[in-house]
Length: 237
Image (cartoon, rainbow, N blue to C red; front, side, top):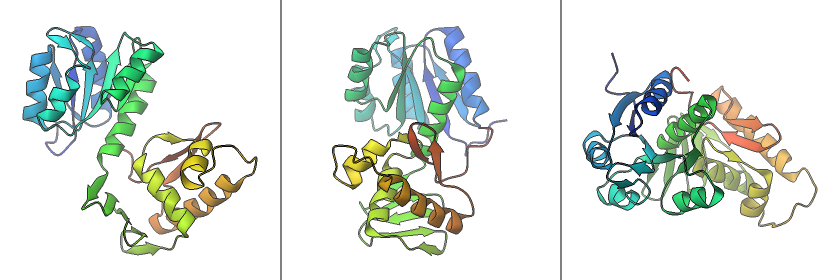
């Protein structure tokens, strides 16, 4: 029986077969699942259920899911939204992301890719930002004004560059962050200087965090960059 404390994933999808496949993947991540087959039902369920993540089809009875994102936010929903659509061209994806979606996946999809994207959104949903100062993921706390990092009661000493790195990772938790993104954001370089400066600094930060947490928090996405996983995996993931 689902635990009421488990995160809720709302699936707004009118194709029963697709909805069932998405629901099976979501339940495998240890979440509760709610289903809606029309846009109106989905908006009502979002208001009533407080989902952590919404999987939203575009072409729904009642309208375009993308067009409803503004109404969803106006209704007070803070859910992270993954658009799942047969409209999968680059222009469609850009439109969805620019109009407020947190992720966009084209149909037909690979189950493993959907599973990974949902897992990343669930982890992002565990981030809390309080008073524009504290970013917290479970036992990991980052104080923006004091520029400090703690894991539980343990203070993690970081250099100014390492602090900028961990803040960038925190704001993109569960997502692949490329070396070029880090060069642009943390070093303000818009070209690759062909050095290992990023790897050296990330390596130092990774060792400090892992020593304090007793578990790896920064993982290497081989050939792509890094992924920040500040909390243990969702049960069943």
